[in-house]
Length: 362
Image (cartoon, rainbow, N blue to C red):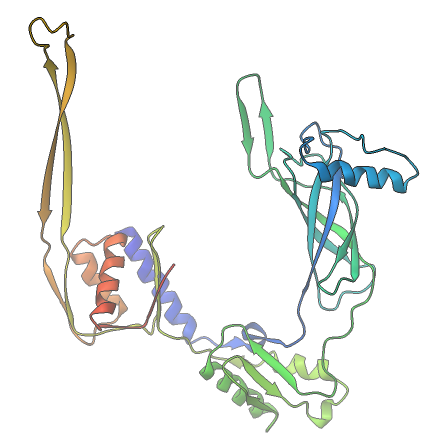
């Protein structure tokens, strides 16, 4: 019952959000102003015997290469459980400048048991174009711990992934992604034709004939003459404009957890709903089994399994064509439907053509 009440609360909040205006800044982004993903392969040292084993060959090869770069000849005989090969990932902001700091995520590549206490050696970070954009180094922060004894062990959280806040240093300035002479394009985060038209109309109210919708996800803007050479000022003004976004009628169902979210635009047609439950009872009674005379058998205790199946029919609830989401939830509460039953009822209503809205099952 509590979960169904929660469903109605979520539905009410969704319907309220539909009449609230949001900034264009929250609905769309400027095309080209995106983050860039960086990756690199590095080595974490200083582990307390929890690093990669000898079976991870590339870890010792990486250490040998590093020692060779410092004038030491390891001759490929490096063996240590205090090191681990890792992958390093980071997100490079669109307007990053040389010297800026970025956060790093470090993940084990081999069979290391833990990265707690490790330090990442200098690691080059590359973008998809193969160019180096940052350099990462520093001590790891792992949100967990582990302890073990002779016959037992305990651990908490994931120990083979850590972070280095501000551990990456940007090496070069990025080019300005904002177009100077070309039309400015706004990309909607949630594509919708109606929302794209509303954004275009709202911009044209302030700057006549400056915007036009291209498709459900793109609005093209022509920078006015007053803002030629100053696209940042133009973007700053239009991204603050309020727009009421439109939303499609959707019902999202997660069968694994029983969570259900019903949008405010969902409509219910005329239908009758019945809910019945099936109860299965299995009981077990012990009995003594005696061997046959002269069979040299032994007395044994066995169990007699009994299965009973009971089906209980529920009341039939009529839903008129004007039923809204609130009335649907109240009706399903009246017949004692839980989240699992509600999922089946929604699927049946959709199959019967009495539910108008997209049914999404995760």
